[in-house]
Length: 217
Image (cartoon, rainbow, N blue to C red; front, side, top):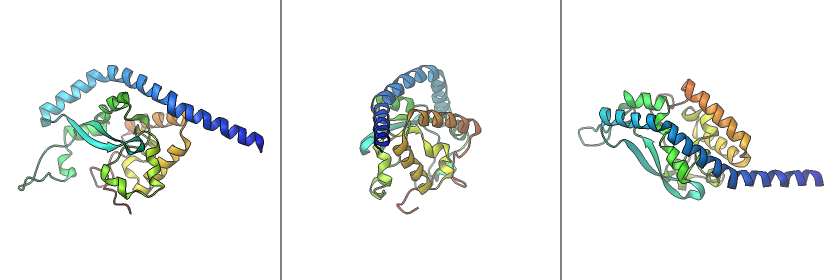
């Protein structure tokens, strides 16, 4: 019994050291390296978006992060600015086409989030940052997803991404929060690469984006 308690304490210390010290350091170093390596690609994507769809090139939106702190997330814009006769934006399905579909299918739209990681707002692995409007809809268990930094990829992304239901996503997010470790992060990153290559789970069936969370679905 004493031995088991001792081992448990050691595991918690190792987990805290990785979460609070090693992981942030790895994130910043890797983000800096990848920004340098992917800069030609990001410039190319930015030019294509400008020539194809015009401005803005980036999609910038406020999202809740660690401890629900609000930050601005960066992504390449994949949808057009087309509106109906009343000036309202068309549905996502009608605005995601051509170049935007290609960029999203290759996950190039996520590249600017490397700067979010370098700034410390995000990590490479963690629950995806969702909309601010969802915050009052979470139950106590779902709120646990904000106990770690949000990530570019995470458990929910490698287990099905937008093909999952909201409840399934939250369960994977919470599992990650409770079991975060170096080897789990390595596994998730490896599986993410495979998912990107296979282009699986990019959209919810029949939709361009995931349906909004309403606290019940």
